[in-house]
Length: 219
Image (cartoon, rainbow, N blue to C red; front, side, top):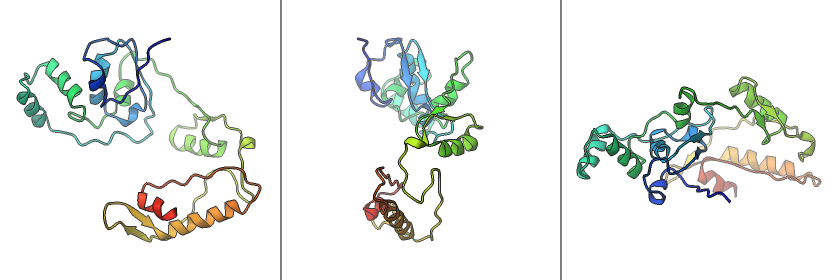
């Protein structure tokens, strides 16, 4: 058996001492979605690193903290402001500080001599969806390994992406920043009735919304 630890970049400081090269390999997943500064303490702990990510996904969303704020924290902790060890301690103790808009993926991609491997086979979606995403974002490189023949499909519907345009009936929550749209809710419910009118349909349906208020009202 090989010991494997799983953690977030934020929880690493409470789990592992700040020792150089304590891990033979550190694997960073979803590396396009967090900034490379937060990864520095984990890179310090690694003898080797594998960085996995997708540059076409949503990048890091962070609230950068000014250098003066960082210097103030280090002064309050008795650290020399320009020392490399002090900056390392700061990133480890406060990973939310010193963040940058550049992702770890972008940082690793530009590293000279780093071996690069592209995963172009997709098992998640039917060919029509994969092909659309591939043409839009990946220069047609993706290959679908999902067989449409194995996917359940309601009668009178086709595989792929279909767009339903609705009216703008957006309503804001009175207590937070959440929103809902009555026209969209109506369209979702009508589509569900159409799908489940097919008694032979044995598949499942997922409904996603970025707003909790919308989800609650659909329920």
